[in-house]
Length: 115
Image 1 (cartoon, rainbow, N blue to C red):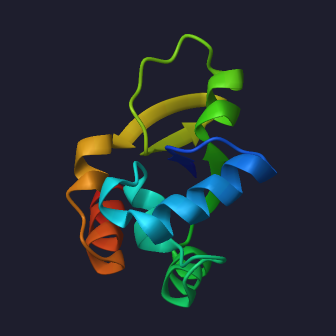
Image 2: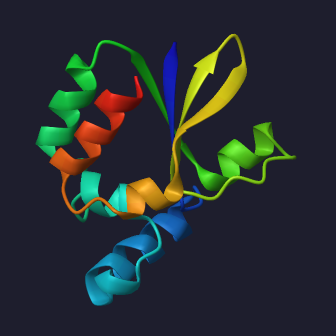
């Protein structure tokens, strides 16, 4: 099993710069709680990096547009987390569950319970 984390943000330099500005200027209206919890302004938080390294499963991180390029028929809301087995994806942590998290610890508990 692999975990696939899908951010509610699109890839690309312009989008990344826009996201940094949005998180800085108006963090309460930023649309990706997964990113808000796991990343600082410019990089992944060290607590999150350690968790991912030691979780015991492979992890993949995709932006919304990258996921939708693979799964054009997807009607999932983002951010979300999927388990991936032999190119089959199953939602294991929903947008509402991620959005209910306040801290990395909250997110870690959700993931540990889901796997």
